Length: 146
Image 1 (cartoon, helix red, strand yellow):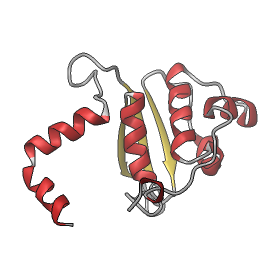
Image 2: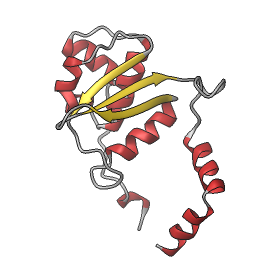
Image 3: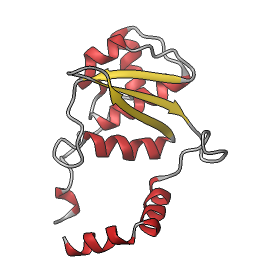
Image 4: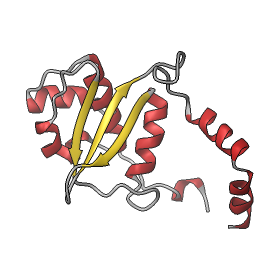
């Protein structure tokens, strides 16, 4: 299968998510809030696609941004989970997903850097894939068999 058909086509991002949250929602954003809003802009092909969650989110926190969303998160069709993981590694933001209630999940975002202790850093996706392949050689066999 060609690379073009793996993911749904994306619109070109013409504005960052932080600018949209500040302008259209009248919200103040911390530096972490700006990073998270811009990351979510990429993940959801427009942060306005999760607009109800945006209004309820405290974007000013310096340590953690918590957002509650009622979206399907999966790895391929409706591939928001895959995009969230890739974007988290690109932006060096730790993402934690937990149950919120029967209709929503809670997603928490914590700022990280590329270097430091395990609780301070967040590796690039290439490092994660390499480490995973080294620890799980069976996964490579399964990939080749598929």
